[in-house]
Length: 251
Length: 251
Image (cartoon, rainbow over all chains, first blue to last red):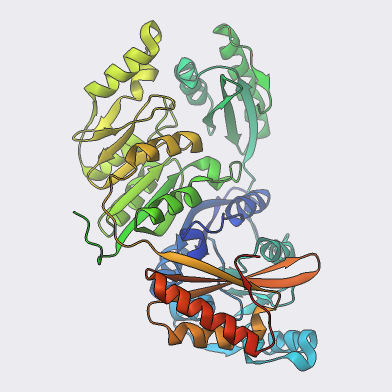
């Protein structure tokens, strides 16, 4: 059962030479972060590692013990460069086996065209369960608190949908954005003061430059909707006192 | 002096609650990866950590000793949530000081409007040098093999431009993409065989789904242009032998 007062945390290991070469722009970090946020789980660390067994084992074992959940993306396809399952089995010290339900799913899906490469996608660390993938059939894998997902964003999202509502979490971090056409350095002192005056609140300041003007979004975060509202009102008032018109929302 | 036969590696620590909340899509990883690649430096690991001193110190100290270069992005602005400089000074065990050249740059830029918040951007770990930022003046920072960059992509790029040609590297990893309208699992065996037959070559297989069809890009990587060509020719031939028409280039 979820404990609403507990802080649930997660980490993500992105597995892929294609991200580290710059060939592919990662699209899973932000999506998973938001998905976890809605479930009341905070993404606390991401590591991007190459398609190298030791690098995957090291990252998985460093992170799985210190977070409630660990996700991985990438490296679970049918080709020789897909080594995630073997690496995670090594991290757990268990052998790799063919999961009978995965074999059944793939055999049903491919029919006569099933082959060794396709059945590679039925391989799991011993003791693992499957995560459904309605999109392209080959399943994701759960072992302990580790969730092994595809790298292709549409497939990752399909697997996350299968997990909707399944993972215990705490109170979601709520956020509200106040913005202004101002340079950050003109409001740094008041931002710090407003944050300090409100318990359990973080205010992040994110500058931008657009059409020759400088602005900043101030993102207020708290698990308490009432505190969020009080802080936003205080921030708008503090900006007004400096002659700065605040926008209630993101610029 | 750069040694062309040595492999130069780098890591990146992305500092930012805004990335871990999913509010902001990172755009620096891929850009830095390509910039490093052109310089013959391989990006080997990325860690995304929150705006928390211990998390930054831990990641920086874990990575700076095992790579030739460590980059950080984010957290060097004028506001209270910008704690990167203090955290990296802590990682090195040195105090934070105002760099006189940075004070001069900011005083010249802001004139009468210089204030404590703006001079915050002149703070550096003791012993550090500046990295020029032609775009918005407030400089990046280099201490030892650690390069402290802004989080806003346009500013990060401006700082990287100032470093163009400055960092010793080895032979760049070259890549060539062969593509086909095929499912990966039909060609897994031949891909592995072609990779194995060519020394020092990696072949990554990246599937995609488009307009109801399935395809894959096969990215061949090597530091040797001749080996890259030989491998590409062998891969095209191996695909043709299976009746699969290869495209020379990315689909």
